[in-house]
Length: 261
Image (cartoon, rainbow, N blue to C red; front, side, top):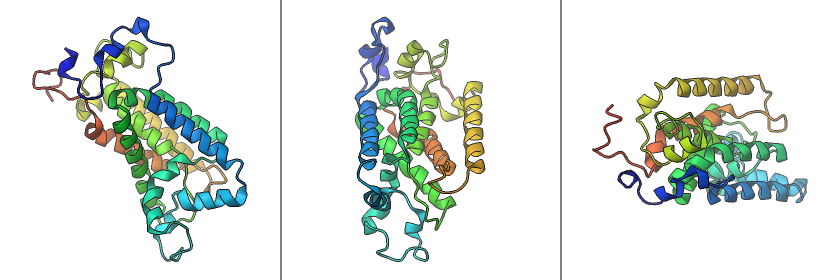
C-alpha cells in the first residue's frame, strides 16, 4: 500500500515496473545542477585570470573573511551579503574540469535516488543545507585561513549520507540494484540507529571516512595544490545523515511495524 507512505511529490506508479524504466533515468534537478556546474566552470575558463580571481573573492568560501585580524573590512568584495552567500556559492565553483567532472559523476550516482525521493524543491534545499554545513565545519577547523575553498563535494557527501538512510530499507533486495532503488525510494526510511547497525552501512562509512582522512591529511595545503577539504566533506556527510528526516517526504505510519525501534 504505497499510498500510506508516499506524500506530496512522490508518485508510486512511476516505479511500478522496472522492465519499462529507461536506461538513463536521471531526475531533472540533477541534470540541471550538472549543467549549471559545468557551465560555470566553462565560463570561468574564458573570462581571464583577473576576472576569475574576482569571482573567487566574491563567491568562494574564505575562512579569513570572518576574521578581521586577517582581512580588514572592505578588503574582500561582497560585504555582509558575501558573509552569507559564500556558505553555499562556493559549491558551484571548481578548480578545473576534472574537479567538476568527478563531483558531477558522484552527484549523478548518489544525488539521483535522493532527488527522486525528495522532489526538486526539497532536494535543492538539502543540497544547499549540506553545502552550508560543510562550509561551517571547514570554518571551525580553518579559522582565519585565507585560502579559498570551492567545490560541491560537501553537498555530494550529504547526498551519499542521505542515500544510506533509505537505500537499505528494502529487505530481500541487493543494495544498489535498479529494482531495489526503485522500491527503496518509496519505502519509509529505517531509524538512524537501525541503519547504523547494518554492516553494509558500517563498511561504507568506514571506508568513506578512511579515504577522506587519508587524502586530507596527506595532501599539501592550498587551492592550487589540489588540497582536499576533507573537513567540509565530513560536515556535509554528517549533515545529510542527521538532517535527512527534515527533508524526507516519506513518513512511517502507525501501521508500519517493521521498524519498532
